[in-house]
Amino acid sequence: NTGKWKGAAIRIMKILKRLLFLLACRHHISELIAKACSYAIFEADLGPDCLLFVQIKNDWKDIDTSSSVDIVTLDKNLPGRDQAIEFCKAWLLKQNKHGENAIRGDYREFAECTIVLLGGTPPGQFTWKKPGACHKARFMAFGIYSLKALAFSQQLDLLEETVDGLKQFCAFITTIYVPLFLASSIGSSAAVNDLLLYYKLFAYSI
Image 1 (cartoon, helix red, strand yellow):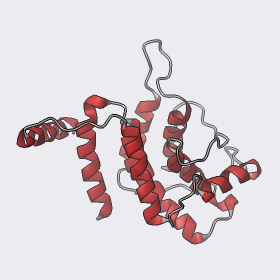
Image 2: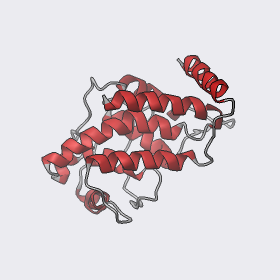
Image 3: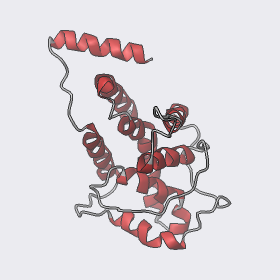
Image 4: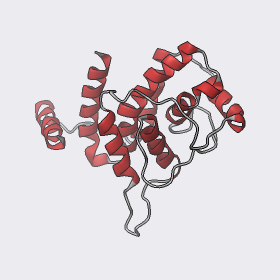
């Protein structure tokens, strides 16, 4: 209930007797949260590129990404699954004033991959994109590459513990990080989104 969270944010501002501080580049903040979660699950990789991402990029030419191939998906009973699918579909169907898709490029790919990994079907025609830059400075690198790594983990011949870690990380990515990142550009909703993030993180940690 968005109205409920807006009301809570207004009450907090009244208690503090000041406006909540809104950071200018909230996408970067979202990336830091994703990176922190990744480092909590996997061993911290302090280089400019994540070694797993590099492996995916190098092995991609040998991976069968056709629609007939079975991929690894997340548990359909995952808390927040249905809401995440609905959120991503709504974003993919957004149009600008010219009637064109409002979400493009990596943002569109990220939303589509999220729906697929959650066991849903994205609107329109979906195809797996060839990996591009995989350095950590790239927006959504932790999200996009992790989703692809889990989806094709059987072909990548990853260790069982790595796959288990990816399932845990991708559960976080799809239900918490994706909505946070895609909505980061809406400055007017920043306070509400921060409050929702707090509640989601608290519930996720239990």
